[in-house]
Length: 402
Image 1: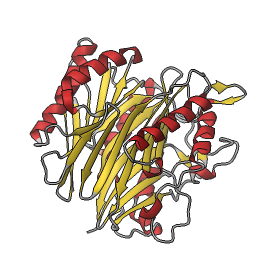
Image 2 (image 1 turned 120 degrees about the vertical axis):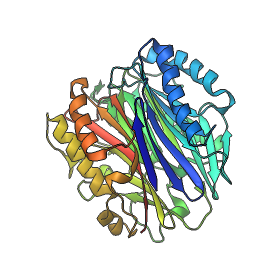
Image 3 (image 1 turned 60 degrees about the vertical axis):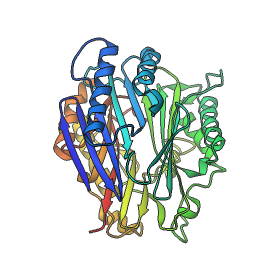
Image 4 (image 1 turned 180 degrees about the horizontal axis):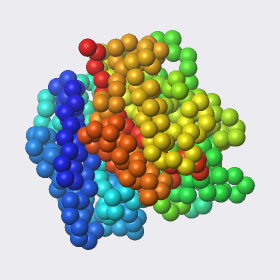
């Protein structure tokens, strides 16, 4: 189901779902040079993969990781010129690549040219792919319009913009299944509290009137439903978000939020972690017949609700992978009413590893290489939502009943 390959500067996975080919790639510049040279190098590397796989013009979503956010406009201009009318929904993430490059790029391509695949590029921020009676809506790089410096107000403004952006094209925020929330100085102070806690307060207040999942949930579902999510630190002090929404009338498509048997659900955390608990699922599964696509939320070295292996980045990385393994494993899928659809770490098609301290990069990478093999991986320097957490990992997995 998944083919993986890594070589200098590039890692990619090819996933065949029905008649549609999906390409997941992570690229870093192979050479040195200035920012423009490194950007062109990374883009060309991804383009070569797309060409090799016969899916030209298929890139629909990108996350661009920048050492210097002041280079964002230069990067945007290069990307506009490179893609022309086939511009992906692109997020510019102020997180330095761990390997000391100026830029790294994560890209998702969906098999344009395959029967029934339609790609609509509605704006620089929104791309919609449709196939097999299902639309995937990619909304990227939403930033605050308000002038206030309040994290709560800026985050609330972004959620409202995301909802309005989706509504403009006939979609609903209730159809969102995955979010990324990037907050500068995430564990820093905000008035008499913490910035991440204020983000959680905004998310809780905005989500109060949302009804995620709707008719796509399994019959009789009674548990809480929130999108999969990553809330992660970034350079600077601003806020930016992206999301994916799923739209379908197919009766055989089901959404199942996964919780982790090794962890307390984030939305049930005690008040000592945040007065308004983080409202997200540990993962979101899109099940279609005998296949499952699992969006794994940002996961850290936490069991129950307590941080493990304080001060040890390698041990935290291993614990985080243990948590993901339990989350997507067959036993947990059985518990959630999806027997036979469980996955393993080998079924991950794309991974991001956020590392708090640059000095821990080689330690964390060594553990990931041993446990994950050739899965395409982005490594970025980013603060994590608790001061003692050193590593956070997210990904996407694909599985199929035997």
